[in-house]
Image 1 (cartoon, rainbow, N blue to C red):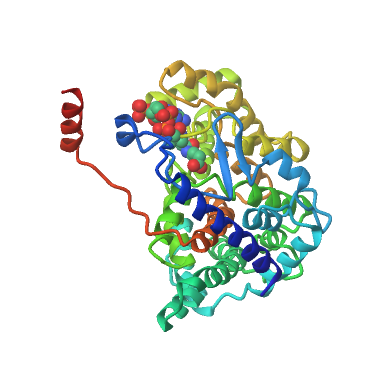
Image 2: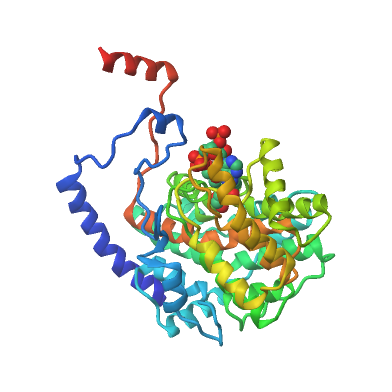
Length: 437
Ligand code: CMX
């Protein structure tokens, strides 16, 4: 048993026991009562699922196992001369609840490198896809093609004990994460660099190798990838991609099928695709105004024009957050150090100064502040990744870390099939009538 698997097993054994007692002793206590506007309103705020790897506070933002993003940037190991933490460290933290050592992180980099061989059949699937198919769709299809190697699927077919589910889930999760940078870089180079692929360098850490395979070997871009793949990794369990992975996984679908489900949710413009939308919107603004250095007044006018057309301002607003997203601020901090004179980065910052007041003035937007997607594209462009429709794939590579770590916990806990109850509007009307009688 490898070192992370050993620590994970020790941790979950304690947690399973704790939960058994907790449910036995307090199972009938009520956490939350559900309101009719929540039933019709996308289930906002209903606390009804377990998610161990991170927790989201509306005012403070995300905490991974109790650590905020600034704390993670300070405390997670930075090895290989990195100036940003390695996402390997965050994965270890999400899996175990403990901050890893430098040795743990170095081991995990090597372990993922050892597990990174992608079956040829997966490349064939990607090669067969027309370039007009969105990269996010190609990515999802490649993840589905990776399922050919699912340890869980094979062992389940042979017949296996429930008590082994967590073990094979761990194997699938580790293999899947190890391979995601390779398949996504392959999709990138196939679609945007004329099939001119760059072989993996398995001596590099997970993010540095991703940067290398995308085609930029600068230390700054490797550090950007370490930061990017860390901060997008998890956002508690209720968001659409995470919840989808958990839901699909609850049917005992394996890690690949579950992750592919989550990626189809991430591909929506109200969720992860917003990072593409932000850059497309900024490009339209630049074209419309005829300048890459718009004044604040010009930006304000363009924002109002967008809203007048009934279009949301991409990268702004959030279903839970009520504050500037710490993931936006972490990227702003990185950009201030590395690309503060870039025109597009400056547009992002000026939009940040202008949009919240305008959204507030509408009187209906609950959170006028930027989310993670408002910043990422401009920095990626600065480092040469200019193809906007690839950005959500990069988000997906990172998001896999959190949702797959949680899938390991789901299996360790033996989480049941998820099956909430729906109601018809007629039943709601009858409920209202009965409760007012
Ligand atoms: N621009 C214009 N209007 C907005 C808005 C924005 N950025 N954000 C919210 N609103 C509007 C909503 O469309 C809604 O209008 P209607 O009542 O006319 O339908 C109203 O304000 C209330 O919405 P809300 O309760 O504040 O927000 P929701 O929880 O319903 O939606 C989100 C959250 C993210 C979908 C929404 O803010 C949005 O569409 N933002 C732009 C897209 C985006 O950036 N998505 C990425 C989110 C982060 C991620 O998942 O990656």
